[in-house]
Length: 96
Image (cartoon, rainbow, N blue to C red; front, side, top):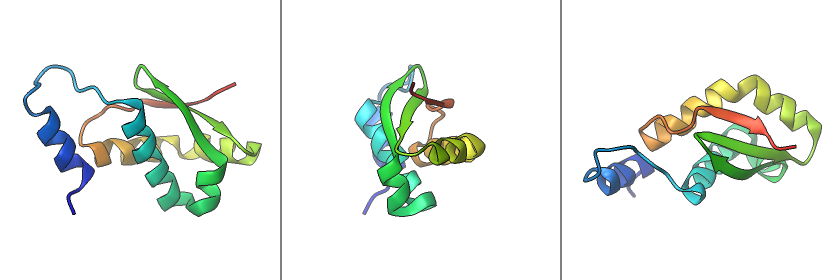
């Protein structure tokens, strides 16, 4: 099974301009990282809402999760970018 980074790099290899990624892909990768870090409870309570200008906006089932994501946002951003193979995520914000 190929990893996402190799598939995306082939897909965007022809385009040397700006690396763009769609919402569905970033949500999938973000949810995968959340499941690795926090398990099924994390996936149920940390909901990606939309992705805009290199920022993912998330809502939470419980406020405790908002604090957890805020404290670990740097690590999560790095993991998402490493999975993609390019720096496409710069920030995680809480959707109000």
